Amino acid sequence: LRKGIGDDCAVIKTSGSHDLVITADLLIEDIDFRLGWTTPEFIGHKALAVSLSDVSAMGANPVWALVSIGVPEKIWQGDFVEKFYKGWFRLARKFKIELAGGDISRTTDKIVVDSIVAGEVKKNRAILRSGAGIGDLIFVTGGLGGAAAGLKLLEKGLRYETATKSEKELLLKQLQPTRDFKNTFLGENKLATAMIDLSDGLSSDLGHLCESSGVGAKIFADRIPIHPKLLKISEFKTNALDLALNGGEDFELLFTIAPKNIKKLEKHFGKTVTCIGEITDKSAGLQLVNGDSIIKLKPKGFSHF
Amino acid sequence: LRKGIGDDCAVIKTSGSHDLVITADLLIEDIDFRLGWTTPEFIGHKALAVSLSDVSAMGANPVWALVSIGVPEKIWQGDFVEKFYKGWFRLARKFKIELAGGDISRTTDKIVVDSIVAGEVKKNRAILRSGAGIGDLIFVTGGLGGAAAGLKLLEKGLRYETATKSEKELLLKQLQPTRDFKNTFLGENKLATAMIDLSDGLSSDLGHLCESSGVGAKIFADRIPIHPKLLKISEFKTNALDLALNGGEDFELLFTIAPKNIKKLEKHFGKTVTCIGEITDKSAGLQLVNGDSIIKLKPKGFSHF
Image (cartoon, rainbow over all chains, first blue to last red):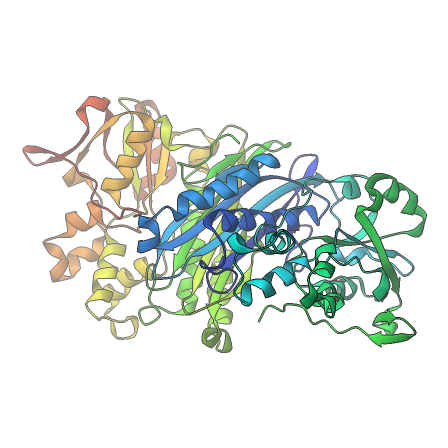
């Protein structure tokens, strides 16, 4: 075992040229999803996507997967399981993931899914949370806050079928998160010094990365890439920054790189990555620069228990 | 992928000298265990044991594991999770299994565990269910029916604390199944032509093995090794054979070997393995020889949905 509990994935030595990385993610009905808010296909997609995101956050290439699913008798009688796998396999085909196995069981009343995805990365090349150094630049992929905004729309009673085009885009960020889960450029080229995926929220996940690395961070509010559709819906205009900072489940990547590598990075990724700040000394803590003021950034994203 | 769904484990190629085998087993509260009937330590033990059993049924050496566990808030507040891991780690230490990771989540009301164990086996040496040939001898390890008898005692209201010594032994077969999960002799020496672990029950699991191998089987009632404690408790004397044939969760091994290898087998295992019959042509189906009569053996063990 190269790395056990405490990163996006475990990293396991093999007798071959590559390390194996593996992650497991539980999705529980009425905790992680509600049947009235989503579809079986979306649940199948998301179960795979959240684990693909973890594997790609190690700089690894996801290859195979297991799915364990427990459903109550009444759900078993219907077409839920079939549609769940339809959504799962649609995403799996896109990224050439093989379903190796899993378990299927009865439950007393709620649906439960455990999604396991494994990938490979060159020996000792997995990107951990713990490698960020002072002076490294902090980047994120994509736009942030979309998944949290989608959740707020669902909580308000909006459903996919009746949503506008902009609303649909935000709902899909929440219900069917997608990104290039097979981009191993950062890992193969040893570009990122540390990486984590944005599942709990930027403020929390930056906290995890900094704690693992034993460093602090300073990020700039006006550099945080807010999901463009947030600014098109009036109710989100006033709290867009809050959603981007503290909303969970964007499943984008947060990573750090040495300043000397910035050209290489931008050449490959173009404008799909954004520099939001830099790594500082641990004693400085997490700082958010907002206009003229510097405030202490508190992790306000999702916390497990 | 060398072998996907449809065996005790998936078998996955690696870039090294060994294949990876991996299995996942869901354990659901009030389906697979009841809190009033067992202890958190026993649940932790059993979660690992059932997956170790699957890995060893491939002739592979179990090496590392993941555990995903979901618990409701009230259970999280208590010491269940700590005691669960105590039982899990006690067994893990015995067989040198490393905990690589997993997930932990909240549920609305029931406990759910997904146990994942991976092992290694020399390239192309995994023992599948599908390799049995006509004339092969059928063996089982240990004694059968104990776990099913233990379950019957629990259903009757008996609890571990107040049980007699014989009853305790049967309860432990159900609550804390154990066997030599690291015996890779059959795999390394390519002795077994096919293998499966006895989780659903002998009649069902023999059916699975024969169906995968495209063969039939004839087994002898008087050769089936009944768990010795079954014959010490009056209520089980009349149905001991039924429990041994159709009771599940013994987690012993059922395997087939070519007759020429029987000496090698018995030299290694002595009386801990028992020949119960032989593989026949598919057209003969599954036969049970009981005294002078031959009856059709029907799978009556546990079936998933």
